[in-house]
Image (tube, one colour):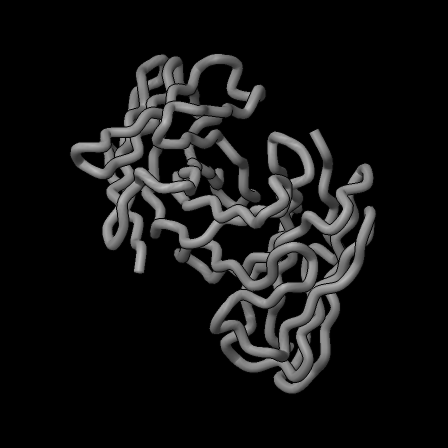
Length: 123
Length: 107
């Protein structure tokens, strides 16, 4: 079964760039699935960051105002996240998740999820 | 963005109880509504997708219903492992959005 594992620096300085990797095992990212990033600030709810298909199709949450870039490394079976110009508001646990879709485009859900990685923005 | 509002924000119940959590969307989302369970320090886990379909391996005491703007998650016969935080999520429009969560605690 597919498993996801996030990794990256746990501490990023304000105005810097947050860079995370999601390693996908048990299956190829080059399938019909899309791959998403979701974050969860401390004691708060879940926020969708964006998603990517291995073909290059990408969508981002407009709330991140052009600061985010999601890409894939097919050779390493990884999903990558870059978030620039970070502030304390970007402190969160970051999750990657596989997006599963039914025949109807809007019928989709996230499963499975990685265990998450904590990122703190602080000087 | 579609706003998802869950109620209550927290709930105390006992093992064996039947509990209901409500999720309301700011506009109609048809049946494009999922439910997740999250335990402290863990990733969310999919319970129910497209309003009422039970994810493989999820106990049948979990049930989902609703359509349009109003949805419910029902847990019949609470078990100790069910005490967690529950989130609804709409996928009718991009960006997909989540409710603020309902924390289910032991009474």
